[in-house]
Amino acid sequence: MDDSEVAQAGLEQFGFGLETSVEFIRAGENTTFRVDSRRGAWAVRVHRPGYRTLAMVRSEIAWMEALRGAGLSTPIAMRSLTGDVAVAIPTEFGERLVSLLSWEPGDALTESGDLDQWRELGRLMAEVHTHGASWERPDDFVRPAWDAEGMVGRHPHWGDPIELGAWDAATYDLMVAARDQVRERLDAFGKSVDRYGLVHADLSFANVLARPASQPVLIDFDDCGWSWYLWELAVTLAPFDGTAEFVPRRDALVDGYRSRRALPESELEELPTFVMARRLVTLGWVFTHPETEHAVRQREWRIATFPAAARYYLSPS
Image: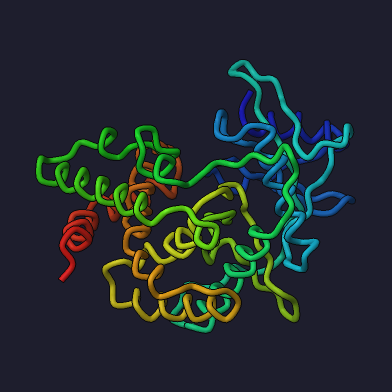
């Protein structure tokens, strides 16, 4: 049973007929299809095997809906015929989870040099973090932690690039040294409630849809979970690390964030550690997701730029 067949089987449990057609959109952590029907347009997510449990998907959607209830715009989750937000489809390789979210119109915010876009993104990040810090979560809420273990531990969520790649001795030593320093710095930074909590974990421009005369829509909460608030900023800034664009974008992002939530300079000084952690995490990802277009497109650049970035992180000048 391929992903399109899993999607069709899932749609039946959400009350769609057999004649419903699905259009492939993209393959990433999940395989996403679009369905247009008299019930509107929907994004059908066929979740990657073993990546998220049913409890995790329910928790993701619970927070997404709570954010919408608090005034932020997020997609709407459809309930199945049994009232659940996700269904399990048996396949020859085990159960696959399927969930449906409203297809949201709008254009992704650009990654241009318009620093006002970066300030807007910073404001949104702060509002998401403020909500997560005060939200009374359901008792069965469970999401992954992007902590030191999840990012650079023995078994990182997205794979260990040090073990997965074929590195020359110099690059291998750099990776080990950078990883060890990231671990030490994160441990020293600590997890006090003012710097660690619920984050979207992928609040990049591609996941913020702008609409005329309406507030932007936040999408793709699939990686949301527990982490440092600085991780949110690092995820978006990491692609610009080592370029002339990094500093103005960082400053605008921080400016927007601080307009809604405190971010002391003493904490911001640790941002380079989170940017390096992101480099290590995404390097693992390109090796564990070789079949995805994004991994193929990014692998060469991520490998090529790592040594210089690691040397600077270990010995900034």
